[in-house]
Length: 256
Image (cartoon, rainbow, N blue to C red; front, side, top):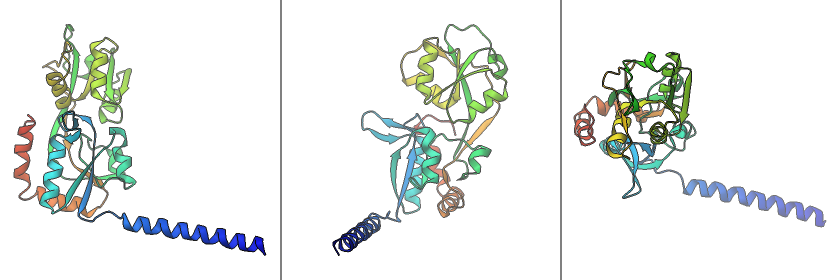
């Protein structure tokens, strides 16, 4: 008898715990008026953490906030490492990505992209005392070249037959290693490289003016595939919100 009672008690306890968890999930269900936006903390000027406020800021953060307000939504920003942005979106931890994540065929299989809000090309950085001429990626084939992990720029280096590609979590670490001679060149988002060199540590580095990347890359907001949110964002980008983007880009010293 005691064994049967114990089993019943344990079964009731498990059932009660399950009900409590379900009730907890119901109580903490996300407000449909809130859109959770993930952004990288190291992609200045597109998305980064302001050391003065410890809050996410940047051009893509501002654009996402503006579009959310236009849609009557409340943006809730979440700091997510660059390489975790797409997995966080596909698993439902966030609803939207607002960062310097470029469109690639591989990403198109997993997530959806809004209409472009900006476009830019990759940039190359070398040490200030370098006397080389760097018109394109062919000029760095024999060098140790850094690139950010998870970006299409790693693929571009491999496509250009650069044999020694060193990957980094962020462009700041990559530029630091370049300044200290651990790599010979850094390849990545040109606006981010230029901003770090302008406002960051006074490293003796330069961006060769003659360099031309393979092409300009469209920058979009990213959501789950076929999500209604992306369609609503595109409607705004086709309408009144488009004119609101230029002042944001100008504020962050990005040419429209």
